[in-house]
Amino acid sequence: MRRPFVAGNWKMNMLADSSAQLAGELADKLPEGNVEVAVCPPFVYLTTVGNVIKQSKIKLGAQNVYFEPKGAFTGEISTAMLKDVGCEYVIIGHSERRHIFGESDELINAKVKSAIEAELKPILCVGEKLDQRDAGQTEKVIETQLAGGLVGLSADSLKNLVIAYEPVWAIGTGRTATPDQAQEVHQFIRSWLSGKFGDDFAENCVIQYGGSVKPGNAESLMSQADVDGALVGGASLKADDFIKIIGAAIKAKSA
Ligand code: 13P
Image 1 (tube, protein in one colour):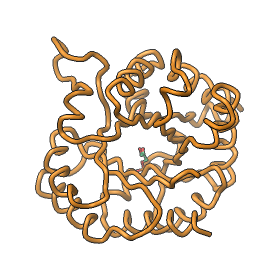
Image 2 (image 1 turned 90 degrees about the horizontal axis):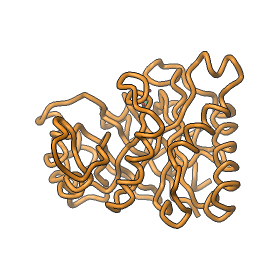
Image 3 (image 1 turned 180 degrees about the vertical axis):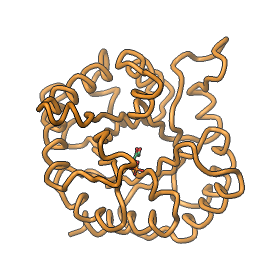
């Protein structure tokens, strides 16, 4: 059985005080239920947030990582550093990394491999742009990103892999994929995983949806059979909204 998983990607938002306050509110209000919850603050606040959520069930994740273990890589952060500050998850290949910072599938693959070696759980993001969707290329784009991001990795090594389907046109735009559109792509991802790594692997792999997930649409999205949770941007910055989305995950998956 797949455990629903809701993660908050804070992106480049918050300062030390607001990070600690948000994390504290989440820890206080976290609903009981069958759901995995993580927050991914900016690197510089990982320790602050980690200390606040230590006694709660909320897990800590990072928004990015570099694949080299150490050395002259100015401005980069290693897997060992993320482990050292208490991270369990790391987002890899977010569309903002791909499209603003030019990250390739090859680089993303190196990051996934280094995360796995360090026993960090990778949240691999995939998603098509609007012109690609309009041109009927959604599946081709997703397949290329999955195949490229997972080159050289076995089913065994990927048992902690999480995939986040985030259509680029739905991120930060207020425009969400309909539950049917999300389900269609999630089902495609699961069947691709099944072909590549086997049915058991595909059945157990958690696939989150991301892109303007809000309290008002979270339950209908996560009620879809292959939508196992959410990767939430803007709405994860407001404690009440994020808590409602977590509640929606519990409700959608217990029905
Ligand atoms: P929004 O929820 O703000 O659209 O962001 C989604 C996202 O990119 C999460 O990683």
